[in-house]
Each structure stands twice: as structure tokens, then as C-alpha cells.
Length: 302
Image 1: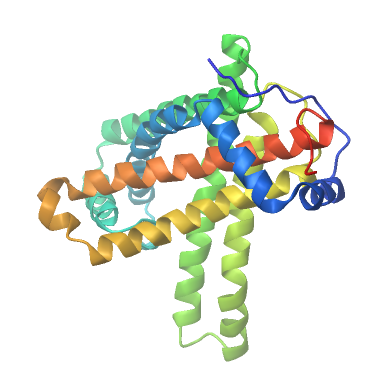
Image 2: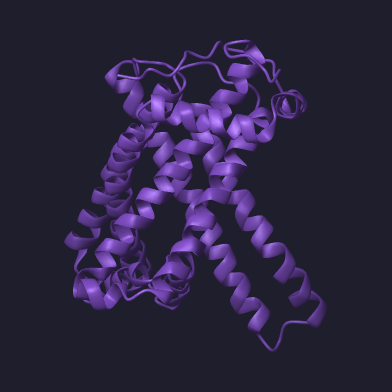
């Protein structure tokens, strides 16, 4: 049951309106109120549930993607996929995902279709249920208690799962392919320099598109224009990046592997997905709070 205030719909708002509202409200005050909205909507409980689903999606997704590449004769791409995983995941979580990908590569070389089909189906089912959890959590952030009819909700969940997975996978591969391209001796110097500077912004834009889809289609309401949602989407993506870098640093200087032994990868994966889920909901809470201020649901500064 959410105690977050309901946000009135303001469909015609654009990016300029968002910026003016942000300036008029005050950045720190808006961030604090968004945190209060997250707490009032029981966002941390939703984040724990989403973290469990995300951890399964990540493992199943790596297994299914690697096995597919091998099964369709694209074994050389598996190294690119595993490099993307290595760059995108922190500390001991990397080890468990690389191990899962290596096992999937062995299965793919054995031409066993049943595990491949089961992996693909399991990934999509888990991703859909995780997207449904996102829909529930984001609705509560907007003060909406009903998620809508079953088939409509899960139809949106399938769409969101596919959209977010495709954008995040594309962003990871873009960064990794960019790394290989810049490291190639055959690549011209100017092209290497240009791609070094462009590949990360391009990957962030792709990831932001996935977060934008969450903010646009998850709530059971008519949302403002895409430009209005851009700020919350950017905060969500930045939150993921900060969480990943911070945990990578923490795992590097701590003795996580010594304390947890073979369970260190599972602990790291669960901690990472929980923090990432909180970052996702916080971006949505910030977007909801910004619109609440603009619509007069909550007062502005002063």
C-alpha cells in the first residue's frame, strides 16, 4: 500500500518546463522530496523484489546470449559479449557471470538445443516478471494503487522487457566493440580518438532510451513528452554507473572473496542488482516529484 501523493497528469509538458520547474524548486530540495516519495511508496521493498529478478535476468541473459551466438556459428562474438560483461559488472559478480558464460559456450559447442531454448524462454519469463515489478513500483511512486487488467499489464511488461534488454545489450556491445576498434592497429588515429570520445556518450544515450521507456510506459497514466522524462532517465542511468563504479572500488579494497569464499560472486551480484534497482526507482521518483511540483500537487520552494 503506497502513501505517496497522487500526481495529477500534465501531458503537454516538455523539457523547458522540466528545467524551469527544477530551477524554481531547488535541486537539493527536489532530490530530498524524491527520496521521501520513494520511502512513502515502499520503494526499497520494491527494489529488493526487483533485485532478485534482475540477478536472474543477468545470469540467464548471459547464458542465453552466449549459447545463441555459438549455436548460430558466431563463436567469435562470445568473447565480445564476455568482455562487455567484464566491463559492466563489479568485483566478484564478474567472476560468476564469466563462469556462466563459459559454461554456456561449452553447451553451445555441443549443439544441445534444449538448454538453449530453456535459457531463452527462462530469460524472457524472468525479464517479463521483473518488468511487471517495475510497473508495480513505478505506479506506487505516482500514487497509483491499481496496475490495470492482468493481460494489459503483462503485455506492457513484455514490451518493456524487450525494449530495455535490447538497449542495454546494445549499449554494452557498443562500448566493447568500440574498445576493440580503438585498439586495432589498422584503425586510423583520428578515427580512434573520435570513437574514444563518442562511444561512451552513445552507450549512455542507448541506456537512457531504455530508462525512458520505463518512465514512459510503466505508469498507468498519460505521461508528459519524452523531453520531460529525460531528466529522470538520465538520473537513473547515472545512478547505475555510480553504483557499479562504487561497488567495483569497494570490492577491490575489501576482502569480500576471503570472507564469503565461493559465495562472494552471489553476494556481489545481489548487492549490485539491489543498488541498481534503487537507482532505477529513484530516477522514477524524481520524475514523479518534478511533475507533482509542476502540477501543484506539492508546493514549490518558498
